[in-house]
Image (cartoon, rainbow, N blue to C red):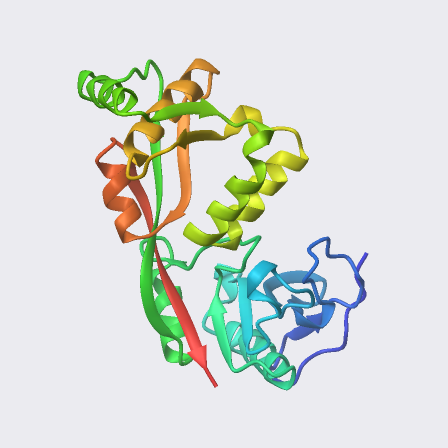
Length: 269
């Protein structure tokens, strides 16, 4: 359902096209920021960039920011300037729109990747480095198998101690909705608030949100209880798409293993 523009002079022998149909379901989708590299009728490269069209929670429009959401070039066509041509086109278009800095991946609320995978895409690290992007913080995808998971003796002792001190661990109830949304926004950020709100709107919050009431600093017990609940429901694989360095240390203490490492890359104009 896409119409393709003519060949680009940026990449001799190949065409760089922009998708001109309104085919994106993402609110921020802009066909003028969606590029496909063609060799005659064959797609050999793709790049999707984004600049916010609608405010995102407390972040607003972030008018200075742009994103390269995802990009690839067919392995048989690499080293011919195709990726450079697509990226340059996207950067030029974003700058015209007022963008002053571009982030690779990590577009909220919906992203493909939180950055560049250090192991799987080491060539991309070099490519974007040459294109002027600078590495930032790392984030981690993590996972754990939950077959037969049970609370350890240490966790049971901590749970009993916490409950004796007045803590209570409960499934979500809608009477806590407003307090939870405000807590998530202040303590974790708008993305967490949005996810909780979507769960409430879809009537799944009571099934997927656990709360701890009246005290602080008991995240470990809450996480252990969540794993028990997941295993009870037949959910046997736990995944985190992305967490930061403090989060990684916390989850590793609970047996969750790192399996991907991403690097945040940005470029300022």
